[in-house]
Image 1 (cartoon, helix red, strand yellow):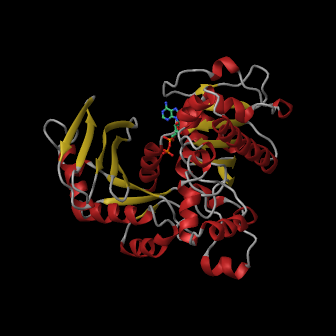
Image 2 (tube, rainbow, N blue to C red):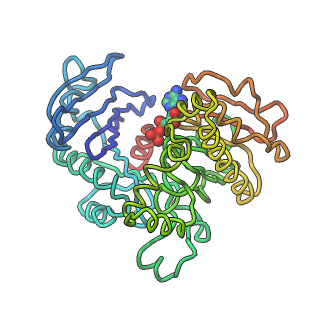
Length: 397
Ligand code: ADP
């Protein structure tokens, strides 16, 4: 079975064609500048990179171009579109409307339009991607795979905010979480690596990238996660503040003459590591600045590690025990200093990192960086959201 995985943004579209026989990626790539002059498709197949400069006024044009290249004599990997068994679409937010991956039909797309406001920066783009695929590949089975699905299992007392209950019922304001596909993938891979049944494991999965989220996973089921109604909540991130007393926002908006919208843009784009350090949102730049003695870069990194550590403590408590901590995503996979800072001082809880093992060079494989005496295993697992979307799509079919 071959699954085409699509991740549509407002002016970009990433894709992978995956052969589920052995989960190999036959081709992958991305369209840039959809609807903007200067369109470009970068397509990787047969170990080569092909670049096509072509205008793509709409997502439909982008998908049509991708399909053209997938069946192309030189750059292609399949003979015809019939070889694609289904399409899996990444969708950021599901609200309470979809708890699981869902087969696309007209009714589902009506609901998608209704919940678009929950993720105004992401879901409308996903809708464009699905509609474009339905136009170019009529009749092809398509599945929506939501970033929020994995968190749909949280108990009510974990996902609720302590607001007026009627307002929750009316407006569905609650914790939804994000990065669920990644958390689910690494949890599954951790169980395989540890040669244990996922149902028997208590895990804390740390997806640390530009956006960061931490989840408590009990027996393969997510019971809590750090992101909230939107991805703004939780640990401080590249440019997002993470958890903050909302009253401070009202105060800041008044002082700085910002509207609520501007205040939210400020919290999403100008805060976090960038706001604290004044240097960058990128952890590589922060590490370099800290090494040169920049104290605000040091402070940003300390705040990040401290924020993550507090979630580890909270989630050890809600899990009632811990078998493994999993680090993944750009920072989790590539930044030994951050991993060490997050887990240091937790020896009393059976968490010990092996400093030498922690310094491994990322080679795309799983690394166990636990110390010899560590009761809790500390794993670094490269995430693979596309494979997970393809698996979910195949499973539903
Ligand atoms: P996104 O949320 O945009 O997917 P990533 O998971 O790519 O983000 O994470 C980006 C972060 O990972 C940046 O802060 C970057 O500094 C950090 N990072 C550190 N080393 C690397 C590396 N070798 N490759 C990519 N990102 C890295």
